[in-house]
Length: 373
Image (tube, rainbow, N blue to C red; front, side, top):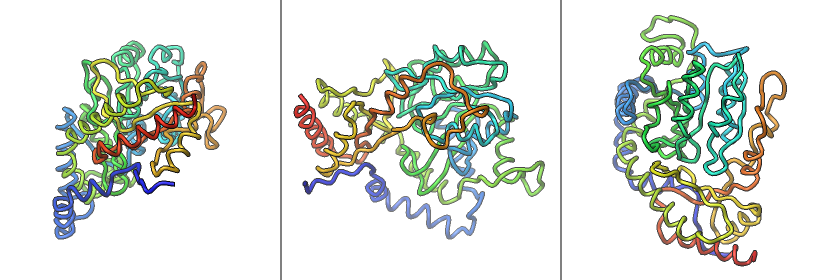
């Protein structure tokens, strides 16, 4: 219907903007002959830890592995429970299942779509060992409340930060109030490599050492201290991430500027717009609107060359892979989670998106919204 083409991702544009530096970084690795666990991984780990104001960072194969290996290192497994939300990517719960533990789902705050801390205590049992708050869409969960509950009940806190690297709360940084932070570097993240990658960031040096052993077959230097796994961040990915990390704050600012255009342009429509908490630094990994007519709007935009996607249209507890019974538990109602999943639509959001493209998306949505009245 239209010659307009507004894609959902800006990967190629981003590469072109940094092509010379990225190509040189990859070339340096190839010429070095050190492709696995080389100096670039160690360099990036130090840079990431400094960026996060933490003592240590350990590069692993994926964000999923960062979550899973933390549980293994803590000795959390069969018979244990971990509280989290069903309104997230499947990997959050999957990591808990992989460790042999049981995820316990509580509902979300409908304003932010993050875990509702007021529902956590009711979900705690004698088997509860940890809480997994997810910083969804680029906005921090209410970590002050989560940390207070965790301290009162002597629970560990692992923050799933796959989507909010560079975000902040009103008076806290991600990682400041938890025991560890897991993040992902798959290409569509705010900081992405050219494949899979992840990291565990922590102030717990003992935990970081355990993760370093686990990611490398139980070994630090040739000697194998225990059985482990093969979950290493590739050297080429680390080199690329070092290049990109220097741009992350600027890119996040650009995302926030695009979000402001969307906020202003879509004000007054029938859509539910994202809520940025006061004084929080939301970095808009995704700009997610909600409408009961989600599928119709998505089709309307697609016909006009604008790609909008759904994150996440089926809550974890409604998916085919959800293991009902002893290996999963729901605490209370998940009504807000289910309502959100049925209505979410993510608009194009990346630093390289132009103001013109944002305005074209806004105008298309406003035209659709007028047609519904």
